[in-house]
Amino acid sequence: MELKRSNVIQRSFVVAAFALALAASVLGQEQPGEATSGAAPRSPLRISADQTLTGDALALSTTDTTIIYPFSLTAPWPLVKLDATANVGPSLRFMKAGTATAFLGVSDAGAPGIDDAESGDLSLRVENKNIRFSANAGASTQLLVKASGNVGATGRVVVGQLQYPESTQLHVAGSAMFGGEGGSYGTPRVTIGASQGGYGTIGFNFLPSATSNEGYTYLGADKASQMVFYNGGFRLRTAPAGTAGGTIAFTDAVTILNTGEVGIGTTTPAAKLHVNGNIIASGSITGASVIGAVYQDLAEWVPASTDMAPGTVVVLNRDTKNEVMPSASAYDTTVAGVVSAAPGIILGFEGHSKEKVATTGRVKVRVDARSNSVRVGDLLVTSDTPGAAMRSEPVNINGRMFHQPGTIIGKALEPLEGGIGEILVLLSMQ
Image 1 (spheres, rainbow, N blue to C red):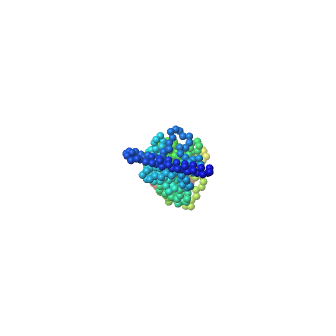
Image 2 (cartoon, rainbow, N blue to C red):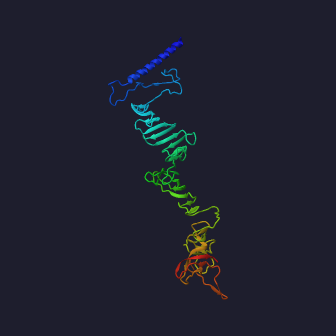
Image 3 (cartoon, rainbow, N blue to C red):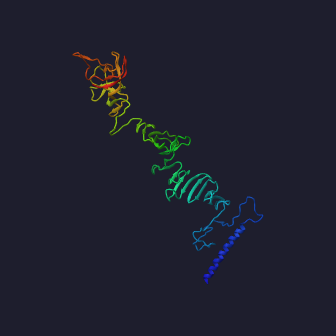
């Protein structure tokens, strides 16, 4: 008896709820003659509260037996179904102080999502199991989270313009910033993707210039560096410390061409390794062929008594061990070589009190021809002019002409008719 009474009561509630909904629908319809031009249609059903709520204004549930619901719901049907035609607009409107702030339901593009109601500058839509975010109504997609693709049934994220969304799981059209300097600093300053005049770059503390198509600016007050992908190769660039927002003057430190040539200090390497500058090696350098030096003399760093100009003839300093000084007398048997301007090969370690002294090869030599002119092939020795050579005069011994041994510097490769000047000499110390 109690069971039947309960069923009767429940059916009565259902009928009452249906009647309320029907009445609300009828009352919400416009009556003939009541329509006002531009007026919004009445709400068929409105639930409101005149004071602060301590509970839900409306609660619908398929399981809570304390809530009366007017419909019998069976999964997977939704508890609340909002349906609107294309000309009605969003299905659910969020209000703040009487002003719409956002729409939830069917977006302007015809896909379920959320639209900003106030300025129309945000759209979040669900399309084909993908999530799409756009800024400014009608603008291109800013963020896309795809449900699947060629890589497999795994998600992928696309930020910016869609170009190759199916080939990567994270696709960024533009620049991305990462990292920092640990907990003591923490500012992300590792940039990936921003390149001016290249095909992409990875680097530290830089941003593409907003005023120059070929420039970069400092992100923070620090040094900057980058690796630029360029024409199938790449370049390593460095820059000194600068101020935030300042223009960066990058130096191309290393260039690798797409053909494999490596340039250090040059962007146009002409060999597998092309170095524009000096090289210091702490180990051995081994070659399968000859060394092709531009200059043609062999020199070494030698301690010197004073600074000397290239071309100066030097002799051993008898008062100090392992030191040279400018020559000062003719036919000096302590002659040790000539100061070289740019040796083809240089041995030893550089020092502020050392000179590059050539002992073999072709080198420019300061020569005094005021007493005797110099012809090609003449042997040269020290002279009384400090740091200068002169033509050697042979001595007659038993009818044969001999040059004094231990005094010869080398053979003249150029003539000098008179005066003091520099000529090219083939050094052959003897």
